[in-house]
Image (spheres, rainbow, N blue to C red):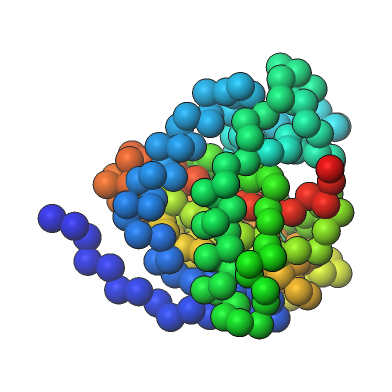
Amino acid sequence: MGKIVIPLPMREVAPGAVHVPGWLTLDEQRHLVQACREWATGPVPIRHTVLPRGGVMSVQTVCLGWHWQPYRYTRLAHDVNGRQVAEFPAWLGELGRRALADAYGQEHPAEAYEPDTALINFYDGQAKMGMHQDKDEKSDAPVVSLSIGDACLFRFGNTETRGRPYTDVRLASGDLFVFGGPSRFAYHGVPKVYPGTGDPATGLASGRLNLTMRVTGLR
Ligand code: MD3
Ligand code: FE
């Protein structure tokens, strides 16, 4: 028997930051989990990113289109195995445009949105992500975020400081979040994952996957 799901309404958490609960169907989630499993094996395998001062991120990351390492995008994964990352597939760009159209309605020209990189983060039950800004992209185009698996506490802050004011949002499997306009350069983080809250029918028995699409502005 499938779980009973009571969808929450779409919500604009801050100007340009729109949360759409339950946006992905179970079939789409299954398809994405399968695709992420394949991307995780290479050409550049999923790994814990090492930070410039020696810290190691608790999430595991694999990239498409462009490889992100703190704090730049390159075509080759110099910090992993030197190989070129897998290409950003056309079908994922289509999904990104549909996400933008659904979150923003007609206000933003979704047809013109051409994301060229995806960062896929896997969280085990202990993984977190500290408050940070994403500003390695040379574009202010929106970021599309998709969550699958265990729910998490997502903290959405402000553009000035790592601290308050912020809004805490629970992100669950299938949720879409779009960050554009004044929210594009806001601090954000994931203080906590809630183990055991995902639906194994997605194909993910435990942990959380987050896929973000971005426009690097590079060529
Ligand atoms: C707001 N990922 O990959 S998704 C990241 O759940 C990242 O793995 C988190 O932060 C995760 O950089 C949060 C939501 C998110 C992603 C990118 C953003 C929010 C954002 C970029 C700008 C503003
Ligand atoms: Fe981020």
